[in-house]
Image 1: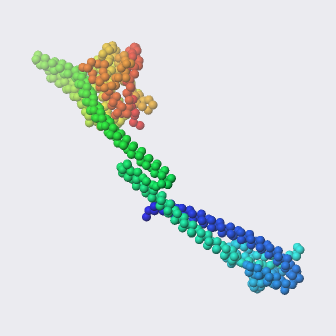
Image 2: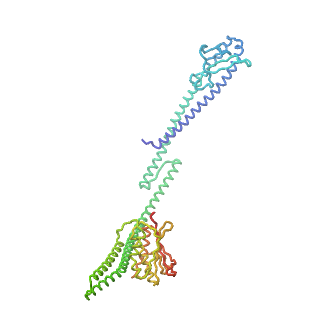
Image 3: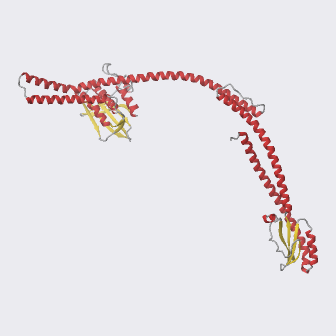
Length: 499
């Protein structure tokens, strides 16, 4: 069963008050004990002086009648229960209130220690001296009933006062807590109503100064909430409009990216067809020559079986080369290759095999610098191959356009600061400063529209950024080739390796 906040407060307050009242009662009893103990010691000291004075002479003269009379007189003093006089030999010579044949009790040091309170009597002794000579001693028993009665009376009265105080406190606390909780209930109900959308709700708590301030602050907060909610609704409406516009723009951008990728793919396929043409030109020429030679020999009736076998073997060899070329291009353009860990050098070899014939036909030297360290990356191998092809073809077009006599494309693979770098450096004169920051923009090209789409470098940057978490940047640097120093564009492909 859950206890309300009001009852928790009342119970906690009563527990604390009970604890404090208990401490007060204990302190009062302790103070009573201390006061009565002090008074008892004073009375005993007075009695000791009187008994020593009264008994010293009779005890020295062995005047038993006088001793008995003194004991009877002393016994009449309230709270004294017995008196026993012993001589210096510890023989009982007179007593009142105590059996002479009974052993004397153990002496106690404090009138109100546990033993004295248990047997309800304080036992002490008073030495009897004459000058410096000890004549004997008086055993005296003092009743502790007066202290026990006073203590019990104080405990009773203190407990009664404490109970009455607790009852009155409980009544007062319950009344106060009821008043507080009623106001809290009002606040809670109003807060719940506001939380459920009734923003116009306000609370009324009463006319006291404290509740009036609380009412004012709460209602001010409710007014601010109502105002903020209205502002939030307006803001949400505006945000929805912006969101709808943003979604529309994102969809347009997505469609544009799809179109860019399709255009880039078509441009790449166009370049692939050009590369196929370069790859096939020599084998097809060879097949034509072998077939024409065999046909001519056949017309002249000088063809031999060896000629047929040699020509057939050569044609089959060239046909196999053409078939292998088709397989290489098909593997490159298919889209179902999985994302995997692959060797970067293998991806570049694919790009080299596809572009080699085109480079060779244009008398371009492809220089590969590799320290033979195997460099691995995770991703789609054909995408990285496409990046290599785009940059190599871009360098090739620049070299052809600039009509460089000794054309060079140098490719380097190396690691630096735990990152992989592939640089592709040509000697085509470099990129003008005013367009260097634009070459990765979509549709930006310095070529004639019939020769370029301006998508190759844009898609290359997009692939490296989004699919390999890397980067591409370019700068103009000098390069030496055949005892000459050239300036050329140097593309840096930065990749994070697999650890």
